Image (tube, rainbow, N blue to C red; front, side, top):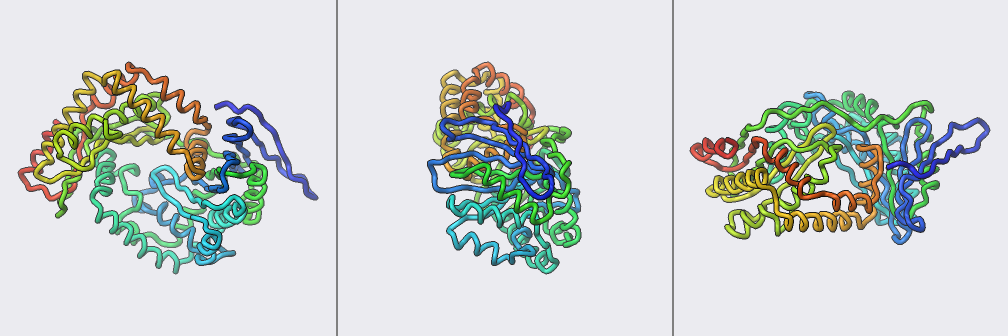
Length: 459
């Protein structure tokens, strides 16, 4: 969105200070829902959303780095680094970091994705300065000591093992590999046992210095907050660490990339002694910047997004072939995925796949009814609003929007975009996406004869 107002501010000192640029990106009603952005000298961006009616605040820092930025030998480094930033700085030990937030009843955590990493803390509004100081200290002053790297290696290997023990989770990593192959988007975010064991403290430190420059970071805060106070506190924290050393540096642009999807029609199977077979049937989707993503969201909701969706009704309600069945979309900077997941008894896997494939083909050729589309639009609008009812969700929205799109969209604008989707829009995107030849990933105890038939599902 275009900003409605712009101001510049400079802090007074004995020397001339570089100027920070502040914009109002979304003007709320009586200050509620106002989104403001300040870009500091040194390229650090700070976005906030004000919600005076609550007594909490969520503060986060988004880093423009994910597993997609790793070489094969560095696979897992981004996630490894996420762990290590909690292990201590020059000012705080790992215990100091955790106890500081525990002492005020706060919550602190982080997550790593394929294209970004986020660190955040949720606290009472009166404790926001503490959260800012702790999280900024972690991001700018991590020591990454060799002994911490060695200790945390064990915890990460256990996390990998935990994921491997959950085939319903693991099958999505397998599907990414099926679609992208040995491309960064096809590798697991956690890395593998071999790559994690091979990572050294020195390599992780170099990765940290390269990707955690202020120009690669977005600070986001939402709740009962004052934008100017947040800016002053963040600036002080970053200047204390010496991170804002290049006043002429500019923020990096949102990520672009080259299309990396492999050919469709691939099948990958991991044999495992599980009670269920876990399957993902899918095809290339849309990039997150594609204007058709709104229509794809409606299509996804109608096809497999709820209890009234086609897949849920056909697979579970009418035939009882699966307990969990749904569709989903994943959008990246330059490409995307559309997938259908189901978990079922191994003896039923071919029946489930046939039903899913038949539904995908039918919707690709015939489209959805107007009633289905209208119901999906209403469901998507409701879930969008309900999903933004806490300060953590608001922080996620504005931080990710700044990092990935370089702009902000109000909730009203989002609802309007969903409402503007027409039946023809949905039918068009259904032809384009669902009309492609699918690929298939399966984890389960399938016999050789069953496994050989899996190619029928993508023929």
